[in-house]
Each structure stands twice: as structure tokens, then as C-alpha cells.
Length: 302
Image (cartoon, rainbow, N blue to C red; front, side, top):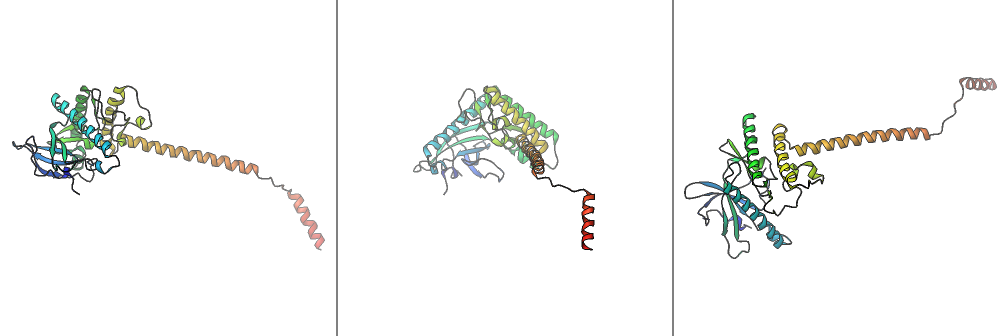
């Protein structure tokens, strides 16, 4: 069944943009379950990326009203953060160039599609790295610099990204990187739908102490320090191909197995010693006594 969010091709949006192409997510892409992507173009020939919210999945849940409310709240939160970033002209953050809603099917309760129009990138850092013939250290360092500047700009507005990873850092003109996807961001000045979550973003990249249940009470430490950790995770990924959280958890698992193996060896040694001590001792006869008895037997036989 085709959903309203999948029927935007060739439509003209209220703000003058025309939908010219559907953009399908790559096999490695994460997310995209509740949104559809399109390429749009305005009268001046400028192109941008349209993110259309797809409500259809919510209507198939046991409690569609609650899910719809959560999706709408998340959309409004991201839209408002993007508007604030655009007003402040944060040049190292992927900005919105428009937003709105269009009615695709008046007879369908989910026929109104809300959307965000974002700056069009060449791709994300992960795709760019896959296309490199060799490791370009200068490019990597420049990208990391742009990311840290982008986070500094967000933090200056009281916004913590919380979901920084390679797929959320977009590349422009093959040279410039910008921090994108504020869907899991939190703000001191605007309560987010996910504000009470210790880990607002992808748990596979989250600081390890949060995964183990330690949540710093101070907002700055909990949120801004998480972003700093995620920058460090990107540095580690560039070197090892793994996130620092994955490496720590793997090391912890190896350490746990080593400790378990050592404990099993110690327990086995103790058990063996106790078993030997519990066996009844066999009485042994002297060699002379045995020889004498053997000689008597031979004499009796003769």
C-alpha cells in the first residue's frame, strides 16, 4: 500500500518547491522508518533535500493516537531547532531552507504530509570514506575540525546534538563537513520529547557510563560531555573502524571472560586438591616384607 508520504513526486509545494525525484535510503543507512526522502527544486534552480514525515506506520500500532502525538512532537521539536539554527546562521550545521505541510489525500486521516526542506549534501562522511582510494589524513582532520566547530555553534545556542556519528555528518562540495540531523538533539530552553532519556541518540555510540546506568545530574555534563565523547568516538573510528563504545564493551567482555577463565582454573585446582585429600590412603608394605612372603610361598609349593 502506497502511503501519502510516498506520493509527493511531481507535486508543487505551497512554498514554491517542486518535488522532482524520490531518494531511496542506502542499504547501510539507519533510520528512515518514519520519513521519506525527496529531491526538490525551486524556481531559481536551487536544489534541496525534502524529509517527509510518514504517519502511516503509526496508524497500524495498538495506540495510534499516542504514537501520532509522539511523532508530531518530535517533528515540531526538530523544526523549531532548525529554525533557531537558521536564524543564527550556524554555518557548520545543516540548516533548513523551508518547512510546511501539503494535503495529498483529503479522504485519508494521514493524508496531510508534514515536511522539512534541508540543504542538499553530496553524501555523508561514511560514504565519502568508502570512496577514498587512500586515507586522506588532511581531509579527515579538516572534517573533524568542521564537526567540532558545528558542535560549538550548537552548544552556544544551548543545544546538544546527542547523536553524532558518521552518517549524521554531511559533506558538501567534497570538502566541507556539517553536523546534520537534529532529531535527537536536546535543548536547555525547549523541552524535547526525549528529554528524560539518559541516552537520547544511538546507544551503540553512547558514553559507557550512561549504558551502565550512571547519569550525571548536571545538564551540561550529561549532554555537552556526551557530544564531546561522540567526537572522540569519531576519531577512534577513523583509526580503528569501530566506535569507542564498541571497543570498550569488547574489551570489557574479553576481560570478563579472562577473569571467568582464571576463576574456573582456580576453582578446578581447589576441587582437585580437596578430592585428593578426601580419598582413603592405601597402606603400603615394605619391600622386604613382600619378598619374604613371596619366598615362603615358593617353599610351601615345593
